[in-house]
Image (cartoon, one colour):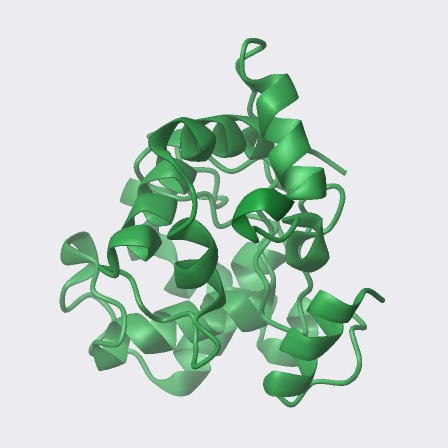
Length: 206
């Protein structure tokens, strides 16, 4: 395990990186029915058809649960989700997270003109700007680390990824914890680098 990832895991109080099954978070079948109202934006199986709405299929259940908790509490503001989670219990959120985590994500396609630049940043970072390699937290295939709540990025919509990186860069999105890991990294990325990274990650698959 590299030093960067170990330092982040220790800061988060996590010393193991084994995956967490969807079933350990909630009930998959219950989550299927409870997620019906989410289908309009995220798709019935969590594979959204619109680039601005994230794919939830195959995402780590702990990460999904945290994001829903943050949206519900106001720690993460998503205008389109205002009030949607208010009436849901903690068990409801766990069940929905379990359902989407158990689904298979579809794979996007990277822009051939951006692959080389995106791959270099994703796998090696940019030492000149102290940008760490994305593989440290998101893995070589973009699968993330479930227990650490590091999200899967492989196959995600490029438009969504680009938008989130820019929000981290501007500080509009700030629910990356006390370590400010995503805000710190995004602050050092140019628009061109963000676009290349987002495109490359969209084409990653396991």
